[in-house]
Length: 317
Image 1: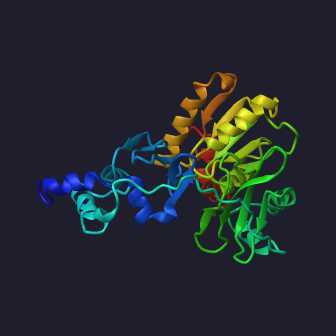
Image 2: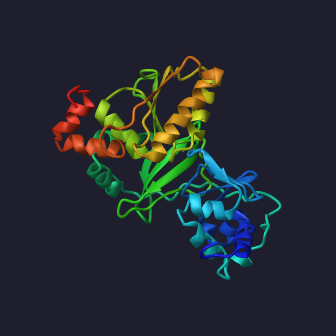
Image 3: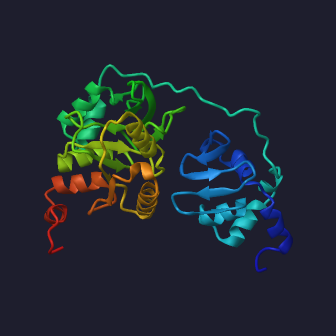
């Protein structure tokens, strides 16, 4: 084979993906029960035997070689060479797994006495002071110390914080807080007790807030903190079991990119197959301009006339 030998290919195929990631990307690896996922692709699940499945994209593989080609975008020859360069081949064929899952305690970051930086940051993203203050009063949002990140909090039905994601007010930092339970996403509830009966679903809290500014609809809004549907399914099951809230329509408002469009189609198919949710209509409502609803909001606030026509459904576009 041009560039690599048959022996090198066979050697590369023997490297276990979990062991490879433990050796080369340990900070990117997260354990959940008996399997693992990646911090940068939370819907990509990895078994201890090295098999993996990227659920939001609908494909998987059996080896590290498959992973480097399909996920990391390497060419076949480059991937083989990377696995046979004297570093990766030292990785054991089977990883050394702890006898029990490693569980991190969830604890919210310390709270800053001031919310000045978070307010300034979110206002620069087009979010109104009134909506920011509403979230802070409800305990869904606060400013952390010492880094002054915006912390978005997901709570259970009893009001206990179970999830949080931090977003830097300067730079591009964003990360889920260690130990977060992704069944509990950031939720912006309606002002009235039941709202419109609609649940709008987003990839990030800022997109949920942006949608509220754009539409003004008094509905439930949920952030998945990515594209995996875990928080949505948990929200719906809890609503089904408790009889509240009465959700009759789900608006999938994920990002207008390949990952968001694929995840939106997968989620719609998943919900339509579940008899518990047969009474719920599901629609795709990706933003019409830009990648996400925050980009749409900012364009709208700039007075982008083309965006205004798209947002109101102008048939001339």
